Length: 304
Image (cartoon, rainbow, N blue to C red; front, side, top):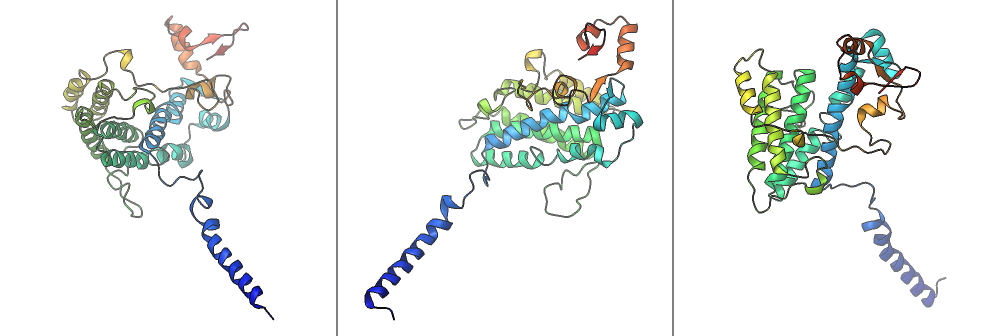
């Protein structure tokens, strides 16, 4: 039997538990600070920036170097590729995936939307140039691509013809140049998050023109007029080494130059070696670049 005092105590205890339930299950208690659901523009930008560096400096370049005998694959997947020159879907799955996720088109589109939300045309224009750079390179490597329907919620979206991809890339690069050049009061851009150009519009615009020239050149064999367009764009493009688009690498493992990671004394430094065909060609021509490409140990063996 519960007395009056016991009843009051039970009610108070039940009330306390009810009052605590929100404290124990809501707000910061159940919010994982390591699992963000909303990202800032700078976070999308950094991811896209790093993805571009990787796209231009990692697997596509290494595999092309093996095929042209500038490198020898010595171990792991590169050893197998060098031995047979046989590709399967696994060879390029990562390269294809990088067009869309983990700093690819999905994140670039998020950055563009975020830039529009704060009326930052400089940021928007830079994001458009990054889109053009990435998808144009994808067309170079794969030909036909999923692009116009890439972000629609439909199963098995159809491929765009390679030339249609190049046309879309030219349009997005032109839009990027226009937005970068707008120079409005709210156009702050990425600032220090941009580890290559520091958000400098005077460097991004020539870079965009250089990209336009590059992709026009890649259509010239079937569209001869593209050569004149490429020349016109090149005259507006990068004119000195100071304007080169280069990655920002460090000596920290995982942040090193992508070639160094596979050639130098890094974790996977034994996967690739010097291509004997390239070295023989340079030696036969007494090419002064040979000492730039290769260094030699005391025992006469080559190193990178």
